[in-house]
Amino acid sequence: GEDVEQSLFLSVREGDSSVINCTYTDSSSTYLYWYKQEPGAGLQLLTYIFSNMDMKQDQRLTVLLNKKDKHLSLRIADTQTGDSAIYFCAESTHGNNRLAFGKGNQVVVIP
Amino acid sequence: DVKVTQSSRYLVKRTGEKVFLECVQDMDHENMFWYRQDPGLGLRLIYFSYDVKMKEKGDIPEGYSVSREKKERFSLILESASTNQTSMYLCASSGGQGRSYEQYFGPGTRLTVT
Image 1 (cartoon, each protein chain N blue to C red):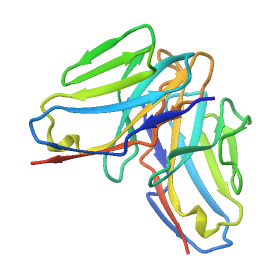
Image 2 (image 1 turned 180 degrees about the vertical axis):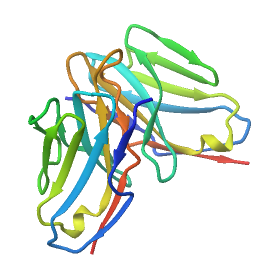
Image 3 (image 1 turned 30 degrees about the vertical axis):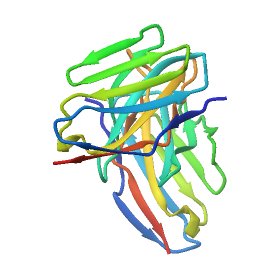
């Protein structure tokens, strides 16, 4: 079955880099996603990575995927106060409409 | 841009009431989902639908039912609301061209059952 694990809380100073980690168990995962949820809002897709990639960069965001260890990370460079949110990783497998979500990681940016 | 709307942002209902939560998407997506979100538990899938009039149970369907009479609309029904159904309810949709597994979320409905 699918199981996605995340740590729960991260505090970071404005301007520093923040790294959020996620582990998953389903080796047949084909897509892995990072979602952001700002206070009082729904989830917004930040970025995704195909399982045949090991890195993806998108402006201040860097996603690293270690398939061997089933480990996904999101690095946010130059963290801003607007990055304060809950971040969810999620996985899907080919032909499966469902996503399996982690429990989320609360990031608090200190000015 | 994909838009997923939910009928209410905040809702307060009494125990035993029948509650309808409505979700509408405007991108002709095949798949629609209902989740509930609780602190420390993340998102848990209640029901999903991959076509009109089709539905599948998620991980926590007990106490809920759904209806999908039109492609753009997916309703979550609490037949007899209970206090343990106080939660944030999130609707999502996916499908169409491109990344068909990517889900687009509505803003959520915070339901309080007293």
